[in-house]
Length: 263
Image (cartoon, rainbow, N blue to C red; front, side, top):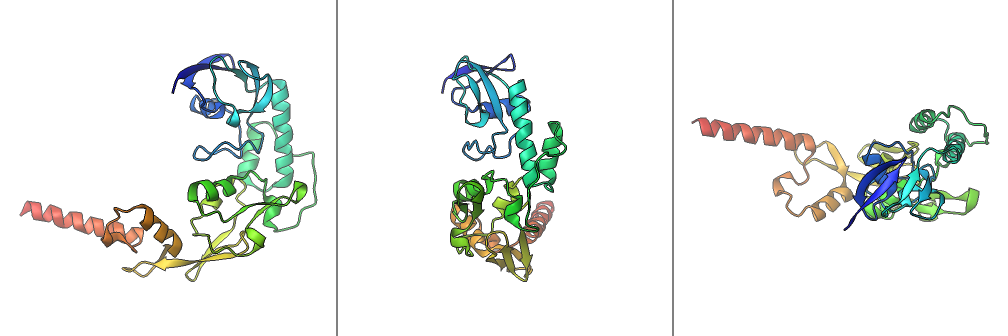
């Protein structure tokens, strides 16, 4: 792939043609906020926070940098008055939607937004009331995990993320990837009595596997099976064994090997 020169805030950077500008900026230490961006997932452009202004080398105007591909001579500015105004307005809207999300409040504060002018009625303790529809959970479940457990439903203000027909899913492998990428920490997961309950997704339940050595619960059965299917060189002695027992086994084995060498 050919190398091109892009200009970000009047400074030149070399990058591969087609690489998204947000990725280039972050690699070079340029601060552009985003809620829906993840390096391991395809560009989405839903949150709109990563907007930049195209000055030259492309269609002029304000656009999302996570979907803006690098071309030779492309010039963008990341903090023009127009960009900053849009960004702060969006952050206020997100704060109105999920005012209790620590990571969101921190991001907003970093960009000069500490409160929201917008007020909305909220249903207490309803997970969807804290969701900002960034789509990260949907994309990680579909693109990275390949389980396809959740997706968007409804239109406009009725849009939500949920399971098909809002019923418990039998496709969930209990990997918790959705919760790990969620910027508002709205996805609730609990491990109780050998069952992992993904409460947010219609109280989907996945059985936890037991370590065959110590008997403690470990990862969910479907997740263990998926790992075994993809990691074909996994040693038989480590199958169905928790991390602590694996570490203990390796420590003992290495100790015996060292003792044998000294004899």
